[in-house]
Image (cartoon, rainbow, N blue to C red; front, side, top):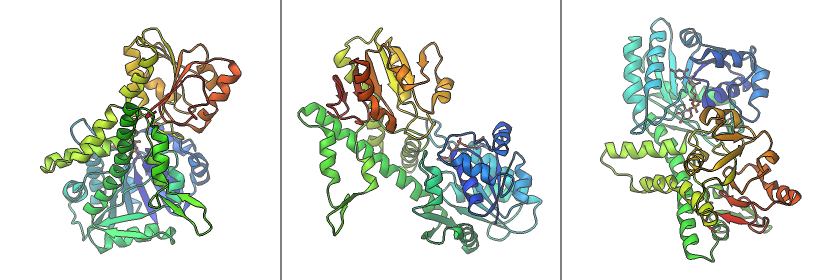
Length: 445
Ligand code: UDX
């Protein structure tokens, strides 16, 4: 099929590249000419495992990139909208969605033949039918269900593993206003013959995305709330508690040969310094805001967010146990991205932790394997020294705060041993064995 993908961020670019890899002819569209040039030169503007290789294999064969949305829409039969939907502090910001909906509509004005518009961005239930549809009809002067179709196909991509998630989907949800809108999406995804397609209406498809993310956020905050109580009670370690919880047959499958397979969901049932990224915080807040608007207070999700917001305080409290005044204390932050295997720092817990420490007068260094460029955009070199190597960040520090659980940070005990230094290690992710370093503090210990 000939497909256009509008927006080449984390979601749009992965979607476009993977659909091309699967055999579709794809045009990626973005307003940012720098991104488009990079993509056309085989250089993805974001870091995602495997993306560069797939992009280079498909660019100028099955994939092209352009800033010309009109031409892209007119030359394809299906357009996926994948522009950002940030939270503006009060509610979801649909500026970009409205903008591209108008542009797609105007492109349809001059297009003969049927076209399907599919929402891939995360939007609150009701947006596709209630906001995008009238904009498309007005701008195109055409009728939905007759001249063009409208669908909603949420993404379930984990940043850092997005290419894998796209190529091996756990589910494909396709919403549509009518049979034709569903059928064309079925054709799009027929390249995944083994995957069960869930067909529904647009509003339900939108809600499935929020429900999925809010569930994960809830489990994280649940674990963190328990961690707080473990700390208060003493002699209980949240890591041991959650190990016992994970062993339940609801969370671990016991195979006939006695081997045990722990469900992937258990990685959200662990305490730490909080969730971040471009999705979980935004999606929880957005649904809470929608609940308020509908006079259906989301009490649980409100609490999920409140618990998450106070995670940085927990990290600071652990440091203050050892350094009642943090003024002049030399601290290294390990990990800046909101999770491993990505350079995305959006809503990363590292940001409020760093800000709090800077306010307290800490002398700060930081290291992240791939997020250093992003960090440079957020913090000045004067306030935060960015180290090129993990080893450099460990020189002359009084404490180390582990914020992102990059696998390579597992070598920290060994590195400290070989240098003969014993800084305090505050493990914000409970990544290390608590006995592996001389001075250890951990969340929920
Ligand atoms: C995506 C989804 O769109 C969002 O709804 C979901 O919740 C998280 O993932 P993401 O891919 O991370 O967002 O967004 P971002 O990285 O901001 O990329 C959006 C892209 O769209 C940018 O490259 C931007 O330049 C482009 N854009 C934005 C347009 O091309 N046109 C516009 O009018 C606005």
